[in-house]
Amino acid sequence: MPTMVGVTNNFDYPVAIRDKDLPDVQAFRVEAHELCTMCGEGFGIGYLRRPAGDLSRIVGANEWPGKLTQILAKDHRQDRSHKHVIELDN
Ligand SMILES: [Zn+2]
Image (tube, rainbow, N blue to C red; front, side):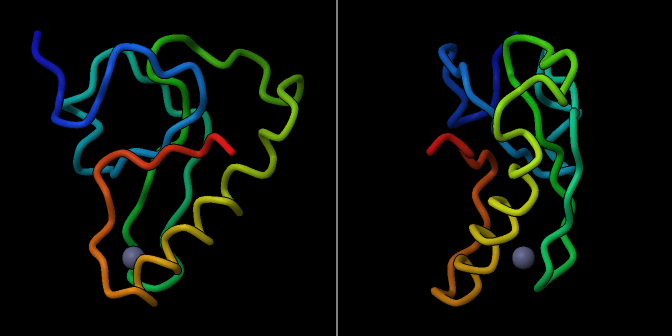
């Protein structure tokens, strides 16, 4: 099955994917969910290639939603549309 544009095979870090795109993504398990504070669009957060397992054992997992909302707010400040896949690795 083809994957959506922008998704590579080598993600080994969390990404956020728009709710509307989630049905098109293979092997993605939503570990967390967050809404854009500006426009309300929903994003699922997780790993593309493997289940995260117990989130409480992943260093920084509790920071993913906050990191995502900052990225989304920045998109609005810079008048950009949200990306289909947002990498949360940094
Ligand atoms: Zn937004």
